[in-house]
Structure formats: C-alpha cells, structure tokens
Length: 129
Image (cartoon, rainbow, N blue to C red):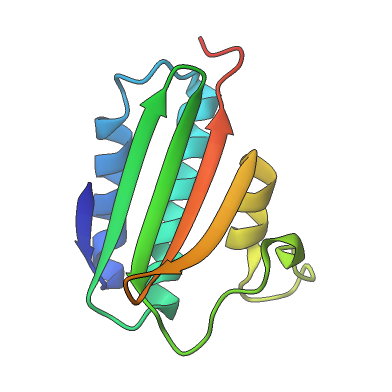
C-alpha cells in the first residue's frame, strides 16, 4: 500500500512507484500502461476532490486479474454513479479520467468506509504476455 500526501506534486512519484512496483506482475506492455493510467487517475481524483490528508493506493495481483483501490477523506462532492462516467464534450477542460477508468476496467466499485471514499477497479488479465 502506498500512502501519498494529498498534493499534486506527488502524482509523478505515485505513477513511477506504481510502474516499478507492478513490474513483477504478469502484464503485457499495454496492460502495464493501462494499470498505471488507472492508478494515476484514481490518485489524481482523490487529490483534487478529496478532503486532504493522505491518499491510499493499493494494488493486488491475483491469477487472471489485478485490482486497484484508491481511497481518500471524503470531500465536498461525491463522484457521480459509475454508469454516468462518460467522456465529456471535446472542449471540456476536465472529466475524462473517470470515463477512461470505466472503459479500461472490467468493474468499478465506489463506496464509503471509515469516513473515506473508496474506489476499486478490477482488470482481467486474459492474454497477458
């Protein structure tokens, strides 16, 4: 588990740590990129929309799948239901991250636990190389 300060300047470190920490997983290059992108988007949203404190990032690999969970203190606004995570208009300044997560992951779950917003994404790894 990574515990990341809720500051934008730590995003690059979180991304690099995710890449390095998951190299031992049996992932194709595309799956590695997708996993890093999802983890990065989850951390970014937790930093931008959470209530501060630390963001927790956990990644588990099991035979045939990988699960990524990010959690943060609950901010002012909860995310929309996952079925509404659609790509915004082309000229929109933000809003693509959650839609990309929804497209890349087989499942996305959002819930509250211990006064934290928790988002868990699961990838299947069929065809890993």
